[in-house]
Image: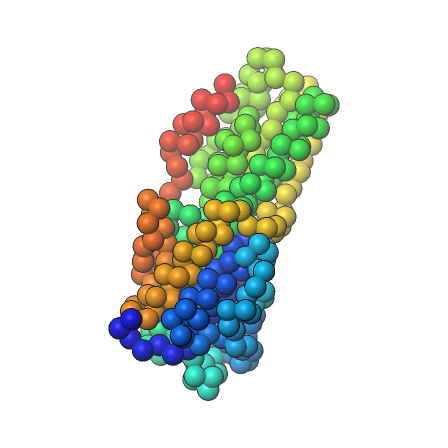
Length: 328
């Protein structure tokens, strides 16, 4: 411990994800372990502006490691995007005696933290919490593994109905800009086709693929569609297109929606959150700032927030190839 940090704030911002509570717990208990005061900042940056703070100790975070969502609540805060809003937040932090903060969220949350650090030289460390797994500088974000398991479980149940009624199901999953959930869950659940933003499958190829599936003897099919798929049609338009060109199929649509963001976090997400929380607090105590804790090759890393925000994650090309082979 080289830099004297006496009080650390912790907040969750942006969309919730399973594992956030485990990360909060880890930050709070690491602070307690190192005799650092910890303050929970409720409702993200909005709560920071309004001074919605609550002291937290090791017992404050009992029995939350298994809970989805975030006990600190989350909110989108337009006011924090203004200099006036950030100035109010700074005054509240100083009045509370908070020396640094850990923000758990995605690129929007990190952008707020980075700008705040630049303006006030205020120590900030980010922990990536988003089910989309779309943050540069880490192989996995908190909530991604849990979301995958939720999606695969839902698809397994949908397949029971698809098989019983010889139906084709389009299953839409989250992923407006990236297809990590769709690709991984699609392979894991044995989907016949996977439509993701990174690859433009094209409607003609989709129809041909489904036609081959039918001719090969498949009585039912599952097509996973990321909400940001580049075919240019939403999942209901895809249904209509296939019904028009392949009337032999009885087509149904299932949009999984926000159920993907809920539920008890997986063991992997709980362990990852615990590791990241410890590293975040100790990085601040080492005098480090404006960084995000990530994981690569099962080792924790620190990436500048600017890189985490501006960098682009890449889809796993090998997994795409595996998917193509598996759908024969």
